Image 1 (spheres, rainbow, N blue to C red):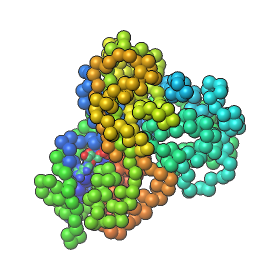
Image 2: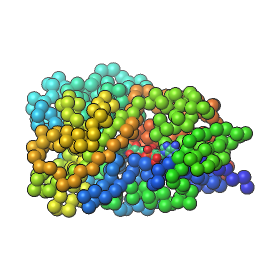
Image 3: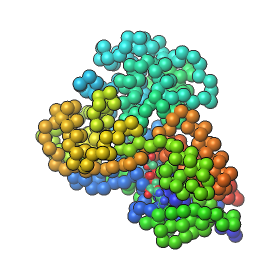
Length: 464
Ligand SMILES: Cc1cc2nc3c(=O)[nH]c(=O)nc-3n(C[C@H](O)[C@H](O)[C@H](O)COP(=O)(O)OP(=O)(O)OC[C@H]3O[C@@H](n4cnc5c(N)ncnc54)[C@H](O)[C@@H]3O)c2cc1C
């Protein structure tokens, strides 16, 4: 039987998902995963720090979005997942830490009475009380920025104080430009509710279980989770193989690496957008140029361990966010030991401090020593810290977070159509497609596998 060969480039969560789906489908594919690094996982990477297994990049994923959880259910690892024990986060506002509204959805307060008086504009409080209706109906199928939607429904003060620091912090981006359809489709749906966005979110919240987990992680880190996924398809994975070029010969594709070449019927590029763009320059210049146009933010994370006696943080606090208006280098601080039981040994306090946004690249110009010093200064301002850490670790992530702007999904659809025309049999996927998080990356891996199966498979298909 004619066995179709598929080369997957990149063994981050997207590439591993795609390869796993292809190999577990009923099709008779030969799959090879080529990864340039010496280990699989990409941005999911765990290593020892201060005696703990601490993630260097992503450290948890959203429970609400189904794709990651169902993949991890399938490989049998999710029964080992844990959820944060503390959920109370704060925001640095006017020189002090203010609790995030409770309850809130993506920073949108559902009960304005939970917010310290005087923080919000009184017209915005009224908008929330009235249900947060948009000023005009949103035609179905159109995209709008999260900023424009929320400034309209709940007001500028709510957006700037709570939503922008939260969503902008997580994505290191400008929420005024972020595609609502891609990054928070639930808000578009809620805004179309007859009683308004806040009223709809309130109803959803009232009907949900307050104890149900919001995030999951693994006590051995997310690096362990991708290792378990990689184990399922280990015979297909080749590490230390950097793909240098892709060219066409007859009806097949030749994939050149640092150590040889492969000829395949199909190629799945599961790398960051900029790496995919480089590999596509000659075979699909339109796709290459469109992928290069996706802006990315760089971030630097510094993990610190302190003596418990040097840093006193209330046990129920999970961390805090810093809005760009504060002018600090730090964008967020996560109290890892408070959040996760497995990162608390009773003697040390572990925290992870983030810096970098799409419009703030100061961290990239600082040496490691300067970065640590600046972030310790920010911790001194916000937490009153006056001690030195026991240990610190720096993880720099250049051009790591794609900025998915208004109209993104439509643009991606067109990009994929151009690719199918210019380089049939070559596919793209990654965290620049449906969203930047792990669940959206798994979704992209699922969908690209479904597209390969649709084009090259013969049997009943896996459906994403
Ligand atoms: C600091 C940080 C914190 C984050 N925190 C969270 C979080 O808490 N929760 C969450 O859900 N998401 C988080 N994310 C986002 C999430 O980690 C990523 O979106 C996701 O891991 C991307 O997976 P991927 O497989 O698409 O890409 P990657 O992980 O980048 O994997 C791509 C792989 O392709 C390989 N590659 C590239 N070029 C080539 C080539 N030419 N040849 C061969 N191999 C190649 C790379 O080495 C890499 O292994 C975070 C991201 C960052 C940077």
